[in-house]
Amino acid sequence: MTTFNINVHEAVYSLSDALDLVGVTHLHHGKRVAYMAAECGKYLGWRESRLDDLFQAAILHDCGVSKTVVHERLAQFEWEDEVDHCKLGEALLNSCPLLKKLSPIVRHHHTHWSELKNLDLPDEAKYNANCIYMVDRVDILTLSALVDESVLLLGKEKIRQKIMSKKGDWFAPELVDAFMDVSRSEAFWFSLEAEHVNGYTSTWKSHTHAQDIEFDELRSLVHLFSCIVDAKSPFTKEHSDGVANLSKYLGELFHLSEKSCEMLELAGLLHDIGKLRVPDEYLEKPGKLSPEEYSIIQRHSFDTFNILKNIHGIQEIALWAAQHHERVDGTGYPYHLQADGISLEARIIAVADVFQALAQKRPYREPLQPDAIMEILTNQVSVGHLDGDVVECVEKNLISCWEAALLKK
Image (cartoon, rainbow, N blue to C red; front, top):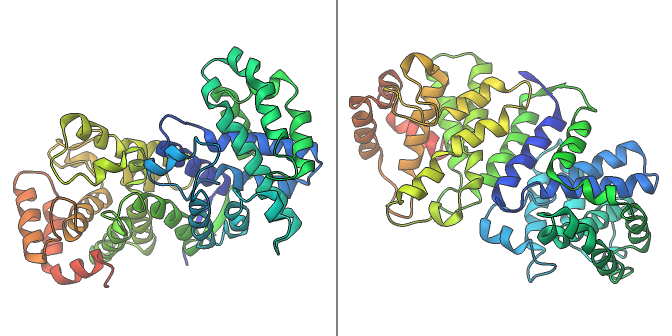
């Protein structure tokens, strides 16, 4: 089986960047929570491997949030049904062998200590989860003050006392005591600024080296990314899976190597990760997008590349994913590449993306049948948008391509 040389910390960090896009007005939340949790853990003398689990769980704690409407609720100190995104996050992490150990921590990062302490879980998981819960609430309390460090400093005692008031009920006494000690200094609060918290998390990222990961393990990690994107709307559910499956199938029809076909599958899963920035209502709009709305949609492939480019070992996959809206006549976006600048693999993903979208129900139309899809693809070739060779391959294998796009093959 094919292996890929990947630094898992880089992948987790990039996934955190993707999650940041959901809350475009609340950037770096996961990274700030990870920083504060780690500082509390260090104060308590937790061992290095435990701190690493804590940091990863903290940076991914909101992986169950894809919808902007849900993300808006995260800014409230508490709200009804807040545990729903914890359960979704748990399910996502359970599907990924590389991150499965983090699932109970994410599941309980909104569970009050008065309940959590009695659950049948290892103490380490309980305290890690509760530590994340505590500093997550700290970060919510700092939101209004982060625009001005002087306001933050003036308000820090009010924040500290709010956390202290939940000692023993929401939060474990030992954790509250640790937070009260580490948060006395101005440096703790200054470190929440973007430049400092990014530097802190970058240092954590550099502590591990790349390792050989088998394709199935990497796919499970990549699939976690795609599930978060596709969960934004019922109309995009399984879109990334369908594009990945069809892209791999087309690669096989073109007799590409096994590794290239696996890379095509990964690129298909990742191609829309940048859509996490797009407001839910744009994806579910029944009518035509306005020019302003369309301009926001257009940046998603650029955001996809920016998220993925820093994961060493998948740079080529990142390029293919980012180019899925390029067109052979140069009218695509975001780079306006022309035919000689677009690889065969990127052209395959472009065709697979159009095909799968047409085969799925959308808010403005019902799913199209294979012949109707083929007519549109042929027209796209005639106007210079899609690659003729790839579309011809689809035409020769139309029903099997349709089955692949809908995950029936």
